[in-house]
Image (cartoon, rainbow, N blue to C red; front, side):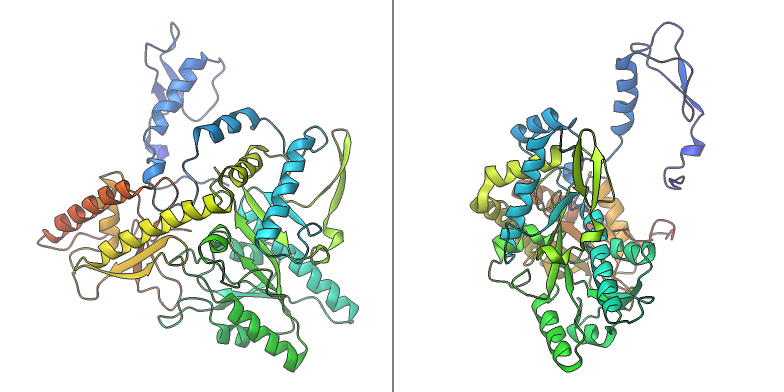
Length: 467
């Protein structure tokens, strides 16, 4: 349930706000802010009210915190406008949209080296969060079924991931009554440590979830090494623990920039993979995908067959009605770019990340922690003992005066004393914009270094970036 955001403090605004006389009708001077008025208004008036308010939002192109796509070609936008009224769930009324969704599933299964891309299962979702939930549900149900066959209890499932995991997996564990087991990252292993995995798993583990592109730093977790450790564990104990790869970002990077990296269905232990189409899949929000290695990896009893709007359809989703436009935009990108085009786009982003990390590393104030060599994400921290007058949170606020949104946040448990900044380089963030960012970054650091005393701290604002 939405709460009042203390930073915006909407409750302190007047209960009514004035309408520009150029847009209002005669006698229409103010409207209530928090309740629906009795009368309607002209469409231009409603538009102008909202248009003016959202002008205070940040510029999406300058938002270097988000992984989400903020630019698509005009032809893609035209297709978007032509198809946003199609309900993705209504496959009987929109059979070609449904067919295109199916093609996208097959393309992704092939891209990730599924044994038989033509027969495996997969679905589109509103984003990777829903895809993770569906993947997790399938793993829990599969574990329960196997335990029941052996006459074993099913009351205490657990799931294993690193402390740097995206919050959706914490939600999954909470919502679906699964014990989360964290392997804490460290300076020596800032990712899911295979040794730590083996110490955390047991016969009640429904899956291990490594991340192909950690949200904090962009690094890949060692999936093949984790799979090897679990293979050896099964040989010794007979415990068979599957892997679900959270490839929200890396699933559209690794196949093109690191094609020889073995992380996907080439590893038999990998049973399912999720990805965000609206991240490096290059589609406007919100779109995700989850693909299973083989058909029987998705338990049949999770699939509902629904009579809806004239047809009988199978469905496996947490959401029901949603626009079909994003699915069509994904297929547009597959047609428009092909493998060579995806490589060119992602390589350009990676080269920009390399450029920024190199230039930021030259500054006396910063130590670069990741340079974009996995996904095009770079992260850095203040050098130890560099200054007591300002922090990265102060730099964050200073950069916002130029329009840039660059997040600062603490690392996870056991490393929370380290605060880092991170930039996500996406399609549309050009080398020219990177040069402009560097100019403003240097100006911001120069200003902060000119201070002769520490900036007064306000813990209300220095509470990190929520992923």
